[in-house]
Length: 310
Image 1 (cartoon, rainbow, N blue to C red):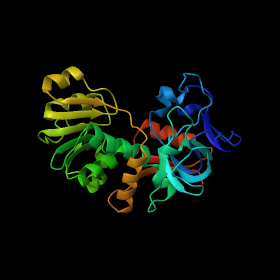
Image 2: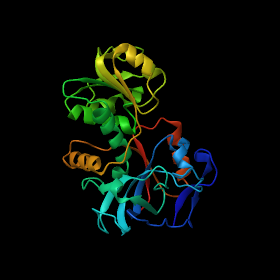
Image 3: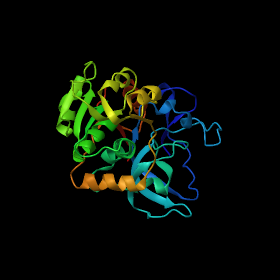
Image 4: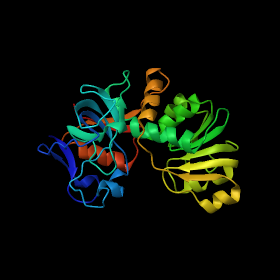
């Protein structure tokens, strides 16, 4: 099969397009998906799980892109809830190969039927970003209607979905990002947009939740805005626990978890017209794909990068 693979540690410069990679085996609980589209997440080539299996053994060569949309080709023993021919989307295991290939084997519990209103390219940009936004806002951030949330990195793949979900939940949304993302983010539901370089973040007043998708100085500058009893939730780095305790706020760092029920919730909102995918760039699975991934890794692309496979 065709695939993008890395035989050596490194970044996108190590990616190689191959047309004779082996089709992955389908083990107990798996579905084999004929990939129609995949999506790349900046930073995934730095994850330890990209390079080793759950026992810590080197598993090179590796295939990137942990978001997938495609069609169920085969079912492993014990795979439940899906049938051959179903159109599905979801997340591949961090410790297994991703979906930048013609086929990928995924635990059945980590995928769901894809939104009928989206094509595969758009659907592939939703699982990781959508579940991250959902879990950050509501599972870890406990956001409620009427509260104010400050979302850093609002123009990115996770941020564009987080803005929409927070708006749908009845929250007041304050968003930060690059100036060129202002029009899009405001159209998605942000009540206030501030240039990330603005030291005051547009002076939004007190917020109940900071959802940090960037880290660094943006996270550190956010503490004075969080009301007592509020929360700082980050996917970029662990928030300062001592600072949180001093201010009387909760602090949480998390990694998104696969969740079929969460995907079903996102599907319902997408098919109801309440939530839309933001595809920043697309490319085919071919010799040009490594360059597209390298460009996304460097930053500057609003929304997600999707690889069209079929």
